[in-house]
Image 1 (tube, rainbow, N blue to C red):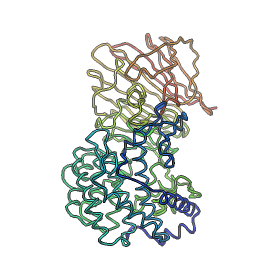
Image 2: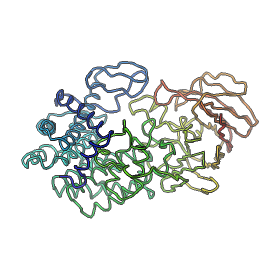
Image 3: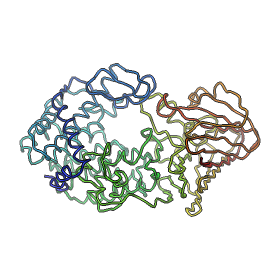
Image 4: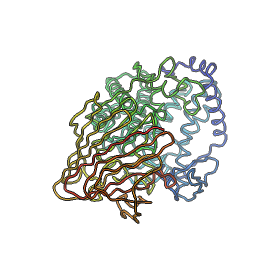
Length: 612
């Protein structure tokens, strides 16, 4: 029996709240259909999640579990086919089966029906009985899984199933639990322990899963091994979380992804009454990690997107983490995040979920407000705000894992609209990921000699004054003997940007800026056939340029505003207007590339919001 969930309150919620009732009805209908058609076999090989992208335009495909051989692209409409996609579909199918174990456990607690328990037993028995027959091939051996494609996927599966088992623990016989432990869970724990050998989001998942298995089944060896020792959960957090609470890979998405298993583990500890000393240390770090995103979120709910991530991320995408947090902590910030996500609570729509149904963290709380400026020197990030302008800055790299070579890049919002943003990643099997999204020219920064940033570098805060809207940061050695420094001054409806480059030797510098909207340029331009054939330059197209020594400006015209880019003159400046891809070749955005050849130079730019 779960000690953290009040099932009577959950049932009342489904009776009295329209969104909750609709969610349960929709979940019931979907799960009932799934149970009737569920059919899996260990002969089905599970492929890589990231392979499920369109072969034509590189967009993420829409999965249809009723059409296993058809893989439709929502961006360009192509129906893809092939063994690689079929195997990725198998992995997704198995993931849905695991999610429906959790959903079935929920439905059983709301209205007991043996069909739901039978389904839970069926899935667990299938994995346990057929365990030795599963033979899935990961993209590389170091990620090898068993039931799923990767051990990461196996960890997600085990934690999802265990959470469902927590819901119905009292309904599972002791012999059933023993069988599941000996034939499935302890063997998965051994797999997880074997592959935990670095500080990374995946080992957080697999060691959290190992610890959760130990906590649920009372296996002290797994508890000790999962929490403690080299690469255990506590070691991961001690070495992988910055002083301000950011997961050190520097991606907001991977930050939340790392939080997810930690919250499942804390939930399991609370649910079964495990309160060892390692739990309090875990709680303290996780709370810090949950607070961090609330300091850098844009006022419209969009999140900054540095490094590898999904193409566009918003706070409501991570509602699950804050629902769990609202139940596990007394921190009012987490309830306010839930209230921000769910608004007035009416309807619920896509934001309804199992965690929201269980905890409803938004109940009685007000949304977040008073979002101000902040600098996080240990995380190499900052958010500088005025009443109408927000500027997120990333100015350092802790690790090459999931990082992008984008020294001192930024994202910009005017009037609660993010107009210039980081692309994140469209998918690791996408050619755009390797050839464009993860390379320097796709970011708001500067390249040197048309090369990508190659060095790890610390970000240095030279000056910060939130009242004046001032941030001055430096990154040294980003290209051999080349140092970058950038000074921002954020005001209402404008940002001043001074990008200073210091080097030993003459180089070609390309300054990049991308923005939503259509381009309007008052200068006479000439077409440029190509800017290059590698390092991302090959994906800049429709290029036109003008050359000037004087001050210049170019407009990006949006529906209700114009973003005007102004830059001070400098000798032999080549201004290129470029088009480029975003998440797929179906979606594009304009930008600027400003080229100079010098030993040292300063790009003095200003971004102005012209309304109307």
